[in-house]
Length: 450
Image 1 (cartoon, rainbow, N blue to C red):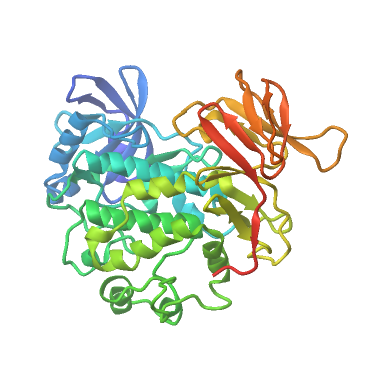
Image 2: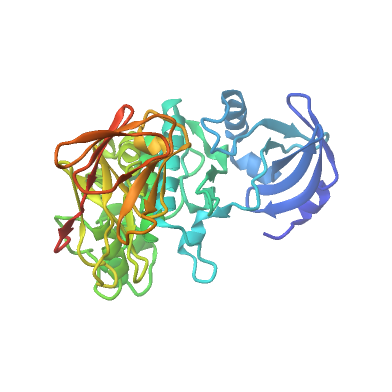
């Protein structure tokens, strides 16, 4: 973003916050239609300051009240770059707010769909973790009686290495049900908002969030299928049909007029087939029943319950690196026999099943306490998968905790595995990790995936 004339006149000026803190405008970090963002120092500490154009504050008459309310309420989670204090400059009729600085190692998730070499490449596990954090943060926001109103690519940033997210532009947040200052962002708006039958609210947030999840996992919009592919020029009428009056999910099980096109959506089909049925069902509900009835949209807690089981259950094709999610049904694990992307035979490791939670057991993998017991928030390493030092093909699970494990072998015998010792990884072996009990299983192969 380029520095504007207004921005250049603010640099160097002093300001005061409503809570009496003193600061000074520093470097202009960016500018847009609403205003500018500056690096500032307040009482000796660095912050970011968003300063609004005066003409924008005259248009958005509810902005100041929303910000004051947000400052009093405080951030729902640490993932929000939340307004901390309002700012005024003597003799200037506009205003702004300070927030924590966004570190340079965060990138906008819009880059997930950028062209190479600028595309943000995240593992499937980190894409899922990104969605988990979003679901949790928006759950906390909605539970406090607020709605975001404009969930879209431009408002979310991610650290590519840790998958930690930041949610920005929180000046749109308002009381759920209150008049909205905006309708939202194209292609993220719920159909009823596209048709101007509703203003943004927590239910439309749920739709926008589902679109964002689909984009994050697939790099594609859920309503862009055959119909969108056949449109040569996307105009207002075609957009209204695709996203407002006649939206159809690309994977709608009952309607095929907007289904995937061979040679165009092949990778998206492979990714869809690689996901567990439970996650696919949430997307189907979001973009079938949820298109028509806002009360049937998937809640944040439903997403969270499914998403949390996926990162540990991912297996990567050794030939092309395409990622597959191992599914579990009735204490049995399943995966395709061949890679859904390149068609090569998959070399599948054993898995550890803990209820409906599957952990792949690849050599070198470290398993943390929280993975074995969902009630344990510790990140301490509890187990490690190791190859036998002299016997090829033999792998074991080493006890890295301070407590012994009880192991039950397939032939019916049991023994104790003390701290520091290892147990052979063999299908049918059950391990008691304190309160949690896991069973080592061989993956059942699926000859075809629908």
